[in-house]
Length: 215
Image (cartoon, rainbow, N blue to C red; front, top):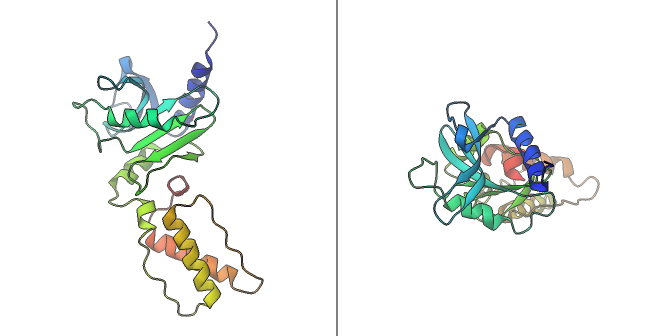
């Protein structure tokens, strides 16, 4: 029997999960001791919450869920994965309830939402994070987007006025979680020094800045 478009997407999703260090299992063959990170297909949620296409376990505790779709747009799918996040059966262990990490994927495009962000929102990512990465994120009292809202006051000593304005403007953009920002400065106005100062402040005060979490 030929594969349906959604079945084809699941083949790609399984491969992407495996490449990221997850062991993909069916609900019937569930073995949480097989690996640190387990992705369980077609997991039955609480009554009224349906089946999660994949439920993610790390260290034998639920940490996330996601919705698989056939190739095509993922617009509007976040509501379905959010439902799974709230629908974990009460008798199952979890890091946090509702589940903090939600995904939508069609095999070639994947979107991610962290409910631990100050203002959760879905954004596209290049692939699923590794199990140890999710475990690290959930252990933090404040996530990256929250830390970017509380960077300490800039020390202006040794900076030109244009550099101060550029750094402060970019940090305001970080705090708003803008998807893109641009610094435009004239030749000789301190672009390199500005970039070094920004990188230093992000590394010193932003904490772990994995590309996935900061996207």
